[in-house]
Length: 590
Image 1: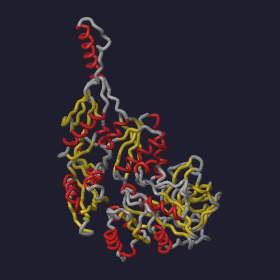
Image 2: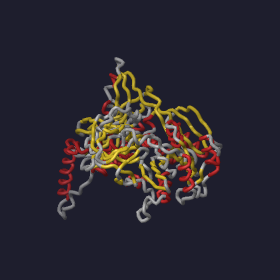
Image 3: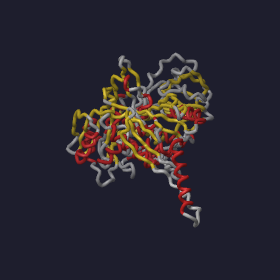
Image 4: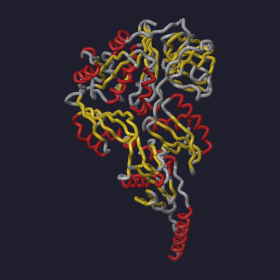
């Protein structure tokens, strides 16, 4: 065990974690040169397309006589539960900061998580090869944050490999080797898992005591189920079988369990004959921040969607879902996510990995309705909104929002926050060039679009993090959307009474752009309690019924046009607008 080091790389999004992991893979010759590609540990196509890490990814490397188990982690706030889970499996980590941007919001949030786990933290400034990198200024920021001498902060270029070998050697020197007893009964922590149709649930584990090999009978304490080990191994980063996993190592156990709902993150695995050992306390359950309803476009795909969500839940513990039924849509699921990016990624994975065509409602947060008898009822979506006569008050979740921005962009950031009607709490200064703004804001105002606005106004330099404060009373109403006179609950929203007209106009205008025209005129309306507050009209798709005519009297044309007019009138009265799934997805993204 003295030759094992378990560590993670953590930072804000786009600060170079995956690129640094690439250099470590090069240094340790873990991946053959002909197979190496940039961001190698980003295994999903989605990660490579978006240029971000979504899933934590472990890999075992050999450096001299040392075995190095690295876990590459995401940096976006929506995936910080991935970071929190990986911290429990390691003894230390590298805090990476972009030299062109300095300390950002998620840097602080991830560092706080690492400190709670009492990890050894080694710090490094990345991208020193860029001309506009402020290496000394960033070093000073990190030194003040960690309360260490500035000379202890590494200056590296993950892209070019500058000083990355020195950093890896420092990991071996500073991060302690794992502890535990190989002769004690097996005690392993599940920090991630995935499903394989042949091997069942494959659990990603860190062994704190004992050992495990293929054929052993193991017991999952919290789930209370027994399984026979089909295979054990480690990550290269692909799964590589081995004879045995021992204390202190990070690897995988193929359990053969087919029921994906039984295996939980934070679960403790031991041997069947030693069931009485004290289990790990488990992970803190993540609280969903954003809710959206997901329905299969083909009602026959409901069971496929259910199975897909269970398999994704196994791989992403922060996803929650409950069955629901809606008129016109049939059976589906109300899903909870940690943020709007998390929601978008899950929906995209359902489409790509399980070939599902989906209908997705507009994302919303969970509200609390207090009725006239002082009874509380949760409201997950606009379709749950009761008759206004029953409502005494509506409460909504508020967040503590932290925004770090260079002073040069402070004016634009403040303008966005003013537009959100956020409440200013405090302003702090890291240096003369950078400010930390602390605000309180309703969650519904920042779940969609705010992050993009912030990046746009600051040219990508500002960053954000948020945490829950609790529920507060709000002046909210339900905004109904009607298409061709029929109420479409999937487009309905819960909005501020004051901003209802603006929001209604925005939704009907967007729908006018993306809804395909019909053979009849389609009105799109926004209404509150039956009162129309905004309207757009999609003109009928024109068909030239007179095209086949050649010559003859003009009355022939008039007769055909009159017949067409009557037909369109009948269609308008009886016609139903079929809304393609891409319209729902486009509305969701907007």
